[in-house]
Amino acid sequence: MLDQDELLDLAASIKAEGLHHPIVLDPDGMLIDGRNRLAACKIAGVEPHFTTDDSDPLRLIVSYNVIRRHVSKGQQAMITAMACSVSGHSLRTLAKLHGLSRSRLSAANTVLAHAPDLAERVRVGTLGLDAAHADALERKAHAETIAAQHEHLRRHAPDLADQVTEGHLTLDEARLRQVVRATDALRAADGDTTPALTQLAKRGDLTWQQAAQRAEEHRTHRNDAIVRTQQALQLIAENWTAVHDLTTRPDTPYAQEIIDGLTPEARTLVTQLTTRS
Image (cartoon, rainbow, N blue to C red; front, side, top):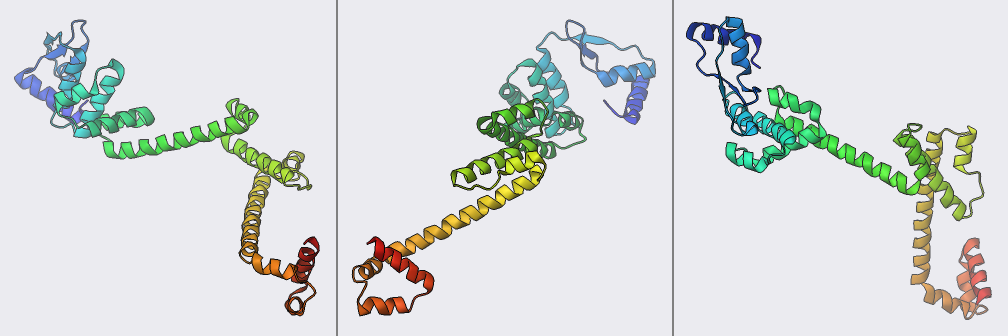
């Protein structure tokens, strides 16, 4: 609709010159085009005149809207996308008919699907299509992330996923608990006999947030230990020929000179290797 000042101007024009273009109805009497003219006629006290068009209503509605000079390309795309969303008509057909780019129509569809509250603002021109599309893409990405997180929870902790569905836990709370549980299982498998973090959290000795933080710290330390051990074993493997040569002649002056220059820890290792050999 026109703003109040524009509507009053239109009413004054109609009162002075009459209604130049009739108001368009479909065969059932539904208004297709002329909302502003009809309102202006009421303000001016002029009896409106109507015409009936029995062509495809969707094509008419889109045509009467997208050809207006004050409507931007983004608005045109949104009007077309909105019309097609409720009619099932082809966007491609209307895009060709009205010279709209498929990229703009795709952007309008994305806004309708993921930020429907912004679609009307685009249609009336208070928000640009590009800005609405950027917001819609962010919402879409966020929704996909949430869906992926929930699916992961469903696969690995279905009982927690059920609690999220039932509203007993938020997704973030459930994910914290799942992380703590998984770490407890890993610690147990590694032979760790300290109390489980899940048990401590349920007992109230820790909050779930604190338990999750400890779980993360444990995984970090565990990964660091794995890397250090791998590096040490790799170094031993690269020098195994020399180590093996030492174990084949443990009581020689050669072996004694090597052992004399070692730290106590290294001497213990030599003893163990020699004994095992």
